[in-house]
Amino acid sequence: MAGSAEVRHLNTAKAWTHVGRSSFIPGSGSGETPGALSIGTATYAVPQGALYVDAANGSNSAAGTQGAPFQTVGHALTVASYGQAIVLRAGTYHENIMVSSSSSVVIQAYPNEAVWFDGSVQLTNWVQQGGVWVYSGWTAQFDHSPSYTYGQDDGFVNASYPMAAWPDQVFIDGVSQQQVAAGTTPTAGQFAVDYAAQTLTIGSNPTGHEVRASDLSQAIVAAGPVQLLGFGVRRYATCIPLIGTIFLGGVSAGSLLENLVVDNNATEGIGVGVHNVTINHVTATNNGLMGFQGNTCDGLVISNSIASSNNREHFNTQPSSGGMKIARCTGLTIANCIVNDNTATSGIWTDVSVTQFMIVGNTVQNNPYYGIEVELSQTGIIANNTVSGSRYGITPYNSGSVQIYNNHCSGNSVWDVGLTEDARVNSGNVYVSQSLCAWRLDNIVVCNNQLDGGGSFEFYALDKASNTPVSAMHVTINGNVFGNNVSVMVGWGGNDNTTVTYYRTPSALNTALNVNWSNALSDAAAPTAVPLPRDVASAIGVATGTQHIGTF
Image (cartoon, rainbow, N blue to C red; front, side, top):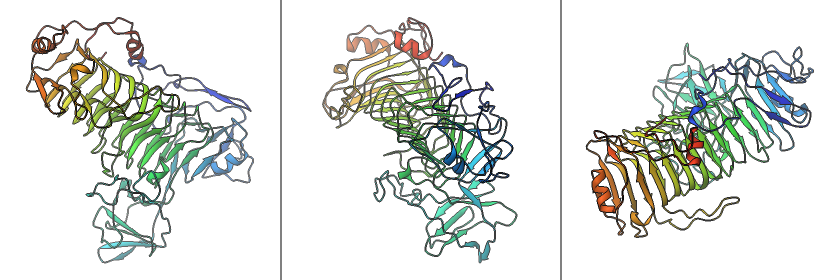
């Protein structure tokens, strides 16, 4: 649970702003515990003139005051003035709401009250038929395109999990059941939905248990600016093309999401398709495809947040899955987050012309593919992160001008830090406000890291397409401590897209490359740390020129 510091916001009839924890300055010195406050413990002040909603006791014919609240958030939105706050009393809100592009609202939980948006309904009246139980009259139906484009198949689905893109969901006592194809007899822990027959069939006895099924596809779609504060969102049947159970698009620039729990939704938890959004103290867990997704989202900040146990539907690692994936963005910050245990996928992933990024102060653990991957990206800082338990630790992939400082990598099975390049080299383009993103490995600085190894390589670099040797890529490796174990200290690629030369000691590397870098093995005297340049020091939150090895 995050700290209990209260976050207040200011509200006027025409516009709103926010202050408090959301004014986060990236760096490891924030001292804040990642993740949302437990639902029901946030204490946001109630602005003067707020509208009130109470799902259990309200009425849409009431006045919307504290003593006479509305029943639905959707109705409150129809009467809210620009910038007005909508305060939700404790309870469950079974709604799909839309904030129009001409609106600007705050939606917040009442202080110390538990509020959930829930996309499911409880089902009773099950009829046993042999070894299964059937619910008749189920009419909810959803798109199941395995693509961001309706009707296309872009290779999202792992053949071992063929129903992954079908967003239907059933929960028994809160536990997600596995979907099998219509016409298949489900066993314990499984369910099938037959759209033509309008039936749900489960393989577990529902007697004495709460059975819920998702019948709504999205919780909140915001085309206008919003603040969403202090509540939970769960169990929505979001298909992939909708790009988020909570989705920010349109003209919702400047929106704030804070102290939200986004859990057990069918595909993407949160999607951002607009600029200057702040996501702070948000927990995204157990979502079917990924926790956080952004595309065309300059200035996106994800801070003090958690992305854990996502991709529970076992989608392919490519083209898109993971804890966090951000594309086409200038000025991205991901700071002081925990990204862990995402299933069969990557932790933090930038892709397709992300520039001027900072990935700082994060704990990235047990994501089986890449820990931190910056792909087709340009000009960024990866600093003060702990990365472990991945196949590939920190990886610039067809990316240039990346500063990799003061990270601690361990237990990654192939490499701790790796540089790789494929046939897309030099095919990048200019995107909106971005500078040229050439999609090539060049100007990579790897300094002051603690690379404990345990896998094949502690550092690895190879161009696989353009016959460019690593020695021509302007790569610097200085001030690092390498583990003295079975891993190869450095694998250095040649000019034939294949050959990699192994160096097992700092002196062997220096002699071969004719450099004077200060690296060391862990059983030797510590190397001289490289003084931190101003931009890296500022990102970490320490003084320019600080000399330190490993994380702070």
